Amino acid sequence: METLLTNASGKKKGFIWKLSTLALCGALAFWNISCGKTTQENVNKQQEKVESISFQVSHYINARKQLVKDYNTLLRYPRTETNKSDINKSLAQIYEVITDYDKKIENLAKDRIEAIDGLNSYISDIERSYTPNEPLDPNRWDFLLTIQ
Image 1 (cartoon, helix red, strand yellow):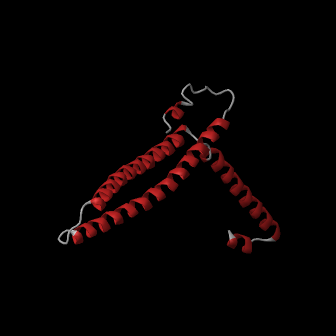
Image 2 (cartoon, one colour):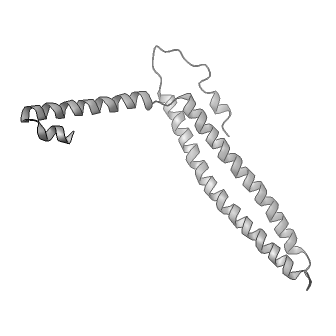
Image 3 (cartoon, rainbow, N blue to C red):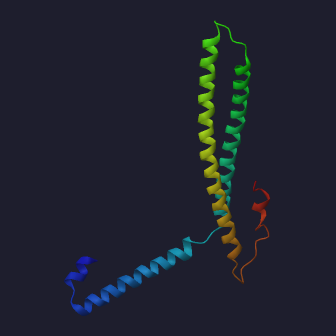
C-alpha cells in the first residue's frame, strides 16, 4: 500500500487512500457482524469450560481433604526413636503435596471465576440479541438449568 501511495500522483493518492480505507472499514464491519454474535454454541463451550474447571477444583479439594486427614492422623501418631525420622519425612512429604494442591486450587478458583464471568457475558449477550421476525428458540434458557 505504501508503495502505491508513493508512486501515485496527488489525485490518485487520495483515491487509493479512500478506497483502501473503505475496504478496511467494510472488512471490519463484516467481521463484527458475522463473527461478533454470541451463539448457543459459545455458551455451551463456555459452560463446558466452567464444568471442567469445577470438576478439577472438586477433585483437588477432595484429595486435599484426604491428605489433611492422613497428615493429622500421622501427626498424632506416637513417636519413638525408631520411627521418629520416618514420621517426620512422611509429614514433610504430605505437607508439600498439600501446599501444592493449595496453589492449584487457588489458580483453578481464579480460572473458574474468569470462566463464569465469560459465561455470564455470553448469557447477557444472548439476552440482548433478539431480532424481530425470526423464529424464537423454545430452548433458549435451557442452559441455565445445568449451570452450577
